Image (tube, rainbow, N blue to C red; front, top):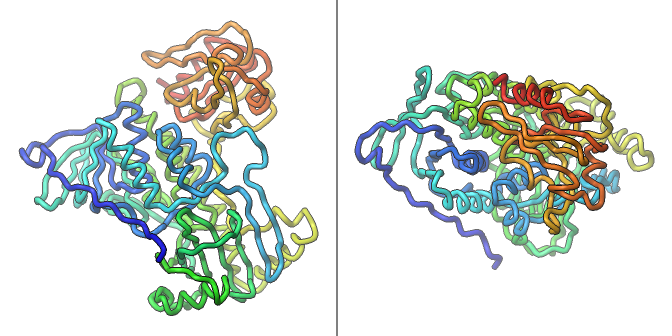
Length: 536
């Protein structure tokens, strides 16, 4: 017998405010302790915000669910102290292969260059991911995890929200200056505020089957169009840890979900893919029919939406959880500035401006992937098949193959927090873009650039140019000098940032570029810092 995951049970505790019937107002209450809610708790606590997390369950997610995590979310979790454990347990990969009928059509490499701390992707079952984040959250005295607490009603005043919460000991009320809803695609919080949630539904159904087996397949993403074992449809194979493998099978529009989930119907599909002699056990299965939708506003008064509660995409490209983690990365530092009175409340509105833009980008990519994988008419199918045929023999067709464009961060190119370039730069690090990592040395030790930024605003200065910290009110942008504070030993940092001598970057607390110049000017830096703080 193969070993299976043992699900933890977290302890329900009655809070003191419930026990004493005292209504307490909290700075932030997070709804939902999935990957996005737990990321929120860790991010807010690291920034010094006391956070209460409410979850109506008392364990981690059942089944592997989301399994594929991209470089940028892993960099965020690295800042929050839990990525090492995820990477050590997970399966690293960066090579993907696309097959058409009986042939290999296309191979891609998601991180062809060296000099990065974090891998392109890891595959890790969602239950491990959540378990590790719960362990990290329990170390913090600023995080209050409340299991078996279900939000059943929410009303709002000008400066706070009132929450009615149901527990095994009855119902009680609490208040929050801000509520962050991370309660999934079927968000009750979204319904409570009357938010719109619109988009496109797709009729096709897909079967997920997680199986446990010993196999020596390489750690790559394999995707098939019209394979010999599943003619006319698509299929996917991915490796997870503990000898668990994720298999996806396209089922078609008319499939009966309840029938397709039965083991007697799943097992023949798996054997057709892997061979009659392959030994395996079925760990978990689900049939899904997906949609590409997003909320009309990420902010409703004192309630902010993140993750699937704010946007829902098809699973092709691993854009769900990966996008939600970046929502939180965008929100946490803004909440901190507003709660401390160092920025106007209008700064929170930039959360919608930036993350709705990112959500629309992800929805567009997700819809294009879905249309390529599941053509809606014969003309679309002929186009897709022609692209796949040509990709085997020509380079120009390869970029057109779309088996799910893998998750990548969206630059906030039109953000109101950006300051436009005055000079010409090469490379990708324009304002609104998340910073690329690079190997450096600090005090004689090997280190990584991203680990030196992220707690606050940073002025990255290349070369021995006159510069000093710049402040707006109580907020300081500290200088980090290349050549003094950090050593760019092999030149990758200067290469990736076009870091000519004298170049200055203003980097936000979420490791995004706010502005850049070819020389230091404290007045220009101060103006850019004010802009990045929402006009503080």
